[in-house]
Length: 231
Image (cartoon, rainbow, N blue to C red; front, side, top):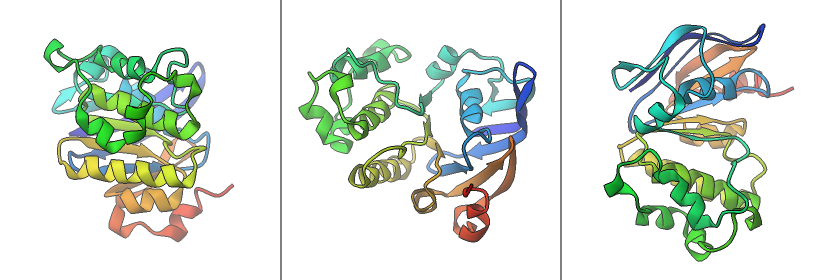
């Protein structure tokens, strides 16, 4: 459903992405790995429409969306969970979730029960401010907010960063459950190798703005991948 084809991306005169290609299918997780600063977040920003590309194209569900603005991509079913979570600290958990209503039709402007089944802690904290949650709880809130938009493509930027191990397991189980429903494609940026290995149906590894390794998750070689993860 998603096909990123030979995209280039620049920040001013600096080239961040060089001919990057990536694909994601419904019912599968594509993991994008690499060290800090190699272009992983830039790739996600390009997919979500937060940064324009200079060359190549991005196809989504048979449509070229390369020039579509971010809000149009959200309406087309693309949801980004950004690095750093970016919850609204002064809004309640309920209000944070309701910000996900923006791209959906009026009849779908409610919070699905599935979200509280995946992240039960949020149900107990609906009236608590987002800024008062722990880092792990904020990460669960950020994923839940994306799910409120009823995405067909869920894009997650390092959801395990700075999170305690117990919540990492909860997030891993949630991603696996969402994949197994067969209703969305998932692109996951991750540096934690074991987390990525356990979830990846397909994978790509980046270095210096380019994809240097790619393949099926079952063929993922820890030795080869770790060469591009260690400093």
